Image (cartoon, rainbow, N blue to C red):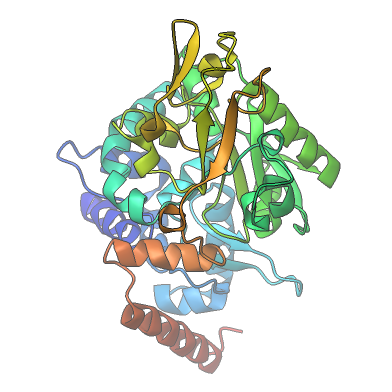
Length: 379
């Protein structure tokens, strides 16, 4: 019976846009058993992508509203589901994806066994064919790599992406933290994950980071460039996060880096160009490139464009201006979704999990359960 509950939960999570595919080893079930009690797993099955209050979930689960309120909040505190607090102060709950989501919410309670299970699972979890069509993250250039003459959209500049965010928080990078726990990784800054608005509220309530002002956000972006970190916001014009990533720790970049042509996988509007004639062979760019796209031959820079992801880290520190960013041809530029909802719907559809009719059924079910909760006095 217990295994059945976790198998149901695994299928439930796999129906979400980010997915939770099965494996031959069953590592995904080990992960769920580590995180969820059987009772929590059963209640998680009652949550969808629509944020709902406890009375709706209570009706669906066949429990009292008081019990639902307590159990849902405990699950939110444990990083198993997502909590939203609108301006009216009501607590709303919804299902959370495993990545980006549940995994990241456990940044403060990692241990070697959990990390080993996750590392075993990543090759199955990250489907490069799906990522190529509907990535959860994209790459934007660091500010110093851009020039006034370039055509750059506001959603292609990190500083513009964060300008209108109402609330900001910085959290530890789970990728660098887990690598350090295992005695690996690098010495790049750990406090480098930027989270905004309702994401920042969730992180703050769960003690996963600290609230920062706009100036510190900009300072962290500058420090990311100095440290050689790739800026990866969520794949939307209106963002809820920016990851500052390194090629040695970041799960996404490590996967992409092992691919023969990383440029084919990463959503970016830019690519670097190199002028070997003006290169002085200092080698700084080679060290800063997170995709091994640059090398020196006869003390002159050589660029492998198939490995360039347009992050601009090589451009921002080139002393001879031998490296520059250019805009890709229009046919190669990514179509960036308007917001994260649109991004997730696109991802779900690419995985064959979130068609138009399934969204309509989900909305109708939520409305019906809300009406029944009122009728039954769960108010």
